Structure formats: C-alpha cells, structure tokens
Image 1: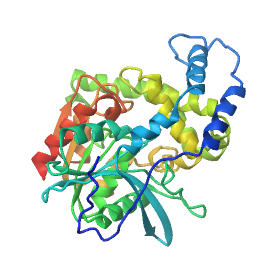
Image 2: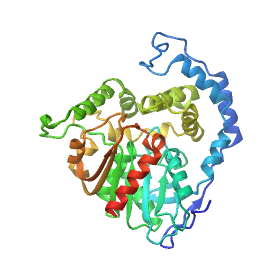
Image 3: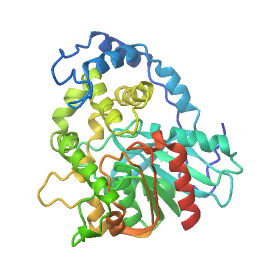
Image 4: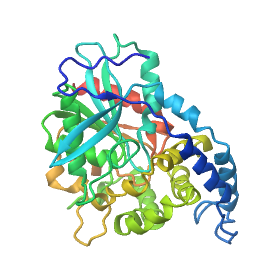
Length: 394
C-alpha cells in the first residue's frame, strides 16, 4: 500500500511507525488468562438477557477464545495502513501522537481528521480506511484521512502526571497535528468522546472548517417546547432515559473514581474483558463478532492504557450539580457547517430538534441500522454520509 506521500506543505515530518508488541507481553497475557479466576455463578450472571451485565456463559466463552487469540494477525491488519508518530509540544509538555493516515496525491484533496471514543480506538476506523484504500488510488483519493490516537490511548503518549488533561487540550493537540501535516483547513468527524472533542475543535480553532458527528450527548435545551416533539422523537428520548437509568453508571465511576477502577482493570485481563466487552454488546445494534471485541480489549491490555483512558469523563459526565454539558455550552456552539448522522441504537440519542439548537446543522441523516460504534457497525453508511456532507460544505 502507498498513500504515504506527505504533503509538501507539511512543517513537521512524522516518523513512520509499525505495531510490534513484544513476545514477552503476549506470553504474559496468556499466562494471566490461564490462571485468571472466574467469579462463581450468581442469579445476576445466569440471566440469559444479560440485564445485570455479562453472563457466566459469555465470560467463559470469551476467556477460552482469548487464550488462543492470534494478536499477530491483528498487527498485520493494522500495519497494512500507513502509521506514524509525531512530536507535539503543548503548554510546556511534549507528546508523541500516534496516527494512521491515507495521504492523497490529488492537489484538491480534502483533509479529514477522524476521532474515536471510549472504549474505542483507532481500530474503529480500519474498515473505512480499507474501503477508501480499495476504492481509490493515491492519485484519485479525494481526501487526506488522518486517524489519531487520543493521548493515553494505544500508542500515543499518556496524559501528564502533574496536571489534568482536558478535551480542549486534546483539541489543541489535534489542531497542531493537522497544521503540522500541512493542512491549514480541514474537516473533523467524531463519535462518542471524539464528537465532544470535534465540537471544541470546530468552535475554538479557525483551521477547522466543518464538523460531522454521529453522537451528541446533551440535556434538554432551555425553553424548549416539548409539545413540538413527534412520536419518534419521544421514542428516542425514552431510549435515552433507559440508558441514563440503567446503563450510565460506568461513566460516573470513570469520572469520579478512575484511580480505583484503573487498579482493578489494569491488573486483570479478565476484568478488562468484562468491562469493555459489556459495552460492545450493549451499545451495538447487533452483537459484534467476539473477534472484534477481543481485538479492542487486547489493544488496551497490550498497550497498558485503560488507566490513562479515563480522563475525558471528567469533562463529559455530569458529576457536579452545576455541570453544563459540552453540547449545550454557548462557548462551543457551532457556527460553521455542522453535519450529523443518527443511528437507532445510539446509547444517549437526541432528537434532531435538540441537536439543531447546538449549532449550524446543515446536514442530517437518520438510519434504520447501527448503534454507538457506527464506524465499526456501518462503515459504508457513515462514510457515505461523511462524503455527502463534505461535498455539500467544502
């Protein structure tokens, strides 16, 4: 594969990177899985509907498959795509930011940075990178696609130890990344925490010219007339309320007690499997293949990044009485072109009429399949929406 011709306008030359986890780390994982103790069956863990979390049957099956899982095949799939690290200094701190990229040779190619969420990673966008690299050549690709790993995720540097890292900090880092690669104008796409970061990026940085999202967590807009809601809008809000009552406790734990949780999850691959595996099954329209879950859990384990991945929840979770969610904060109201793709099994969906209050919504599409991990569940659909949005606003 090519797609490696970095624009001549780049002011910073990134270093090529390949994933190569040491054999010792893989052997340690196998050993820990082999000796890992599984909790005894309970009324809650035996429920086939998984109402109270992952089931005894599932954890035994997943543990057995993980013990024979071939990480080297995953590495090979990742290393098909060009990867880099780039050094960025921000507020006196130095970071190595890992990213995948497909660089186009078209002089009018549109730069797009795509941002993952939690418990996602750059792995979410491999299907879209695969589609684009098959459909186009470097000479015909209409876009430059950049997929960074957030600080503290995968192969990017961890957050500082002497101060909190915030999403505005991350947005600033990614803006610097895009400018350093030679893109003085670009589009951002994001879901989950990536959508919050994308909102800040487009609101605070002139270089970011448009934003497309597939997630918009928000509270009811002030002075909103609820009588204008349709039956489908009320169904969306009912789904939202169910999740906030029965599925959101993880976010409060990650926002308020991340240190305690990190010691538990970073010391046991089985604990990490249960914590992340639950989300992949609960937050999708259809349960993904176990292989997909194991790829993501393995990445977190082998890069030892679960502890460093929680920081964004202090910005995005309403743990204080005076919390104002990012989407409703006038500081981050979107005045530039704003596009949105709505998937039916999103965990905290919002009606279009709510989303419209947060920015200049010029593009909106609803779909009948897909959930929270849209780039994994419906890559063709998400890509089609993004291409249509870019064609409309660029």
